[in-house]
Image 1 (cartoon, rainbow, N blue to C red):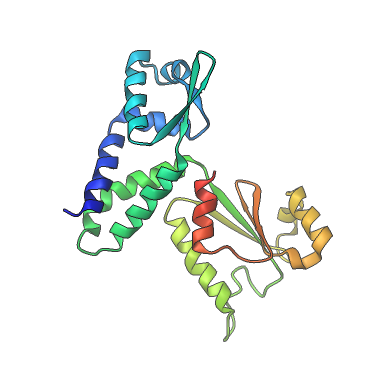
Image 2 (cartoon, rainbow, N blue to C red):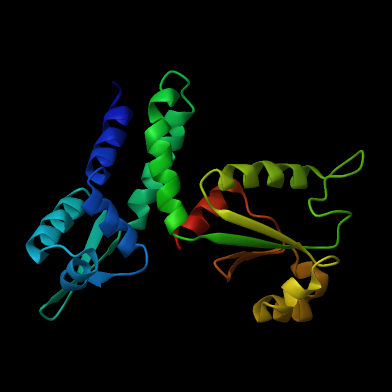
Length: 214
C-alpha cells in the first residue's frame, strides 16, 4: 500500500463513523458549538465532544473560542487536499476499483453542500456553442471541465442570453455588470449565486477553488 493510499484510507476511517459524518454535514451549513450539535444529533454532549476532538486532531475542523464558548467549523483546505488526493488515486488504474466506496462518500459530501454553478453565456448558436464544423476550442475545453465537475455532484446550469433572458433578470448583480460592461462582461459565472468570474470561462482548477470556498 502506498503512502497516499494509507493517508486516504485514514481519512475515510475517521468519516466512517456515522456520528462524525453527521457532524461534518452539520458543519457544512456553518459553525456550531458543541451544545447545539449535541441537540441536533440527539447525542450526549460528552460523546459529541469526543468526536469533535478526533476530527480536530486530524485537521477536519477548526475551533474558535469566544469567551467561555467554543465554536467549530470545517477546515475547507483539508477537504480540498482530500479531493486532490482522491483524484490522484483515481487516476491510477491499479487502485481505482478500490475507491468505489470512497467515491460515494466524496460525492455525498459535496452533494450535501448544495453547490450550484450557473454560467451566463454570451450569444451563441446553441446552449453549448459546440454545433457547426469548427467549434471554439475554449468551449470544447469548458464542456470537458463541466463534465468533471458534475461527477463531483455539483449542479451546473448554463443560461444563454438569447434563449433565457429571464434567467439573467433574476440576478440583479449579473444585470448590473451587463449594464456597466455590455456583452464584454459575458460569460459570467456564479457559485451559489455569488459572482466568481466575469469575461472568461473558469478553468478546472478555478472551479475547484470556487467549490472549496463555499
